[in-house]
Image (cartoon, rainbow over all chains, first blue to last red):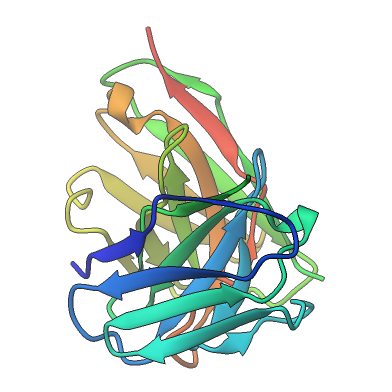
Length: 106
Length: 119
């Protein structure tokens, strides 16, 4: 099983700040990496796929980068609606998720 | 726009079988793999398995001995069965789809259904 490790577990940030979340895979997943946003009581929402492609309707302030084993999700200017938990997921070898990074208001 | 809706009992007794159904509407049923994912309260996401409309299925290795999935193409439904449940199987269960043409993430999800294992 490909193990996905996210860091940090929690990020405390102020609205308007730039944030970067990290995700590491235990083996290469090529660019088969997605990012999801999940708010309380809701299903995850696909933000980024193929490591850097925004899903339909996702604002341009969300960007993804990386390949192989190291990936990042960057939110250029955090909006109030962006406070949530973010998960990375590899789909190169079945599907596995990271444990999540919670982005909370500072 | 595709909609996925999970349904089934919200309470299951220990050692019994969890059974859930996902009904798909508003989109293609044959162009996707259909997966089940679960999430215990306050924890992360775990992929359980997937099925195609042909009935071909694949399961997470650690759950394989207890999981089965089935498909009903006449009703656009996929089903999950998990046997010999324990409290550790208490979670919100989601169904989701992934494109069959290439390695793909889950682009659409159901709202999820909470299943509690308790006597």
